[in-house]
Image (cartoon, rainbow, N blue to C red):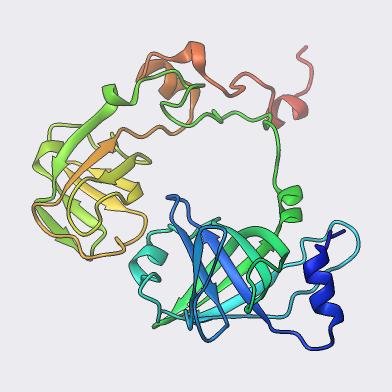
Length: 280
């Protein structure tokens, strides 16, 4: 249930309204962007809502119960704040959004219509479509731990207990193929698969600050990423790459000597135990 301020209520009851839609996005990196369908910029709450920013939203539909009540927003990369590389780099994934109904003659008269997070973002040329998920979508997400063989901790997080600095190497791009395969001399001394499933963060170049996951690491210092970098990779770009972990107990025990912090259940009975018959 929404609480409408007296100013907004009086404006709606006047019979002639001057209302516009405004959208506020807070990206994963903390950047805040504002857009409006109005023909001039609007400012409120410390955010400038850019006119003609390339946003067009579908109608807002609300349902009873706990259904998410999703909607879509579509547009073109016409705003100087909307960058195709940022979309490809995942900076808008799960970004928080707010949708406001604002009196453009007096931005103090406004009503928050919807809050939530960005879902799937698809691109086609210079156009994009983003799914806006209401707050109720969080109720569809798994909560708590799963009873499983593999470890459910992130490598080198607080539950894992290892220090990332002990397993991270600084390297320089020597050669590039298709913006997803990197050859780095500093990695040649490591055995194959040492960095598979690892975390790679660029520290210079066009992709500075971007973080990606390593798909495969082969002998000779060759790294393959799961997806192509958002912007072109160039020889001389620097990055940091952390060793990967396959979440198995044997790897945690033998490779990382960290069995005491293993966050899986490697000794739970499986189907073979259930189907086994008693021995004579």
